[in-house]
Figure 1: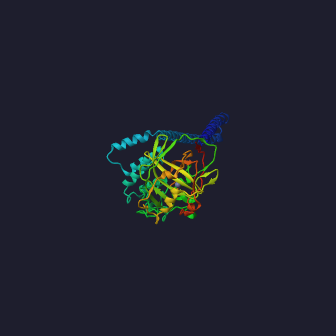
Figure 2 (figure 1 turned 90 degrees about the vertical axis):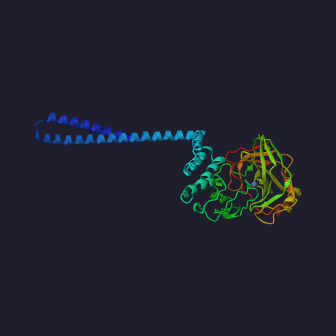
Length: 416
Ligand SMILES: [Zn+2]
């Protein structure tokens, strides 16, 4: 664009020079002749025109130069903002500034949340908290857009959130985080939630794993999803596991997606020096993980959470063989009703009865294997597999509740 303009100016300058030359020549050669006067007038006119368009062209060049400068400045500004976001300084400054104020507008709170999202990512618990806060602050009657934006952002971050019907994209569905975050055992995966976005998901048909991404974007777009097909070569696992599970009252629930045993506080997993609490364990049939492309009959997932909110899952692969005494206790006490925690009187259960002796494992970074497929979950699939009888497999109330294996996407699997 600019180059073209310069070319035009050059041509016009050339034209002007030629005109002046022709003018001089004409004047000196044909002085005194009538038609020369006429020609002279015409040439003068042309010269003036040429000069005018030359000025105009110069102006245009100046304007586009200014535009280019402005764009350049904006680019630098954007880079500066990006750089500031990257090291979190802007976020800190803004947070400090806002903290000093007595009250924040919803827009500012939402802005703060957005900045956290840019700086710390969606996995950061405080990002979620910030969006949650903006949601609480918003008066939905007048600020529906704010509410919808915050709700959808939370949903995109893989959080359990009630979506107002006004913000809904797909009515008549339901949401549930059956896998990772257990809520005091009172979670009812089929209960309608007040105000009700109702996101249903399952393992086949329109609600099967291929469609989870419609309502839970991380399930489709995540790059560190579970389960995986475990194949070598393996790196050396740097994680040393030790478990200290305690016996407690059996609390068992059929949440509509699996049989889950909720565990009272006190059972822990230590990974290197970090302690995790065992929240619950549950089953999948067949096993979600594959080893060398092969599924086991079932898998038990032990879900742990650290004080910092990190999740770690121990997977125990179960194969058809001898009867499993621990599973016998569980299956003998299956809940009579879906969606309610069943606490049979006087039945105690020790989760460690489910584990093999050796905790040598395959380790990888993955996600919840059920919606919302939240990432940042460390998986430890134990190498030693455990038996249960064919009849015990058949007694598990779900014929198929396993997510297919996901792409490795460059992740490394380690082993010890
Ligand atoms: Zn699981």
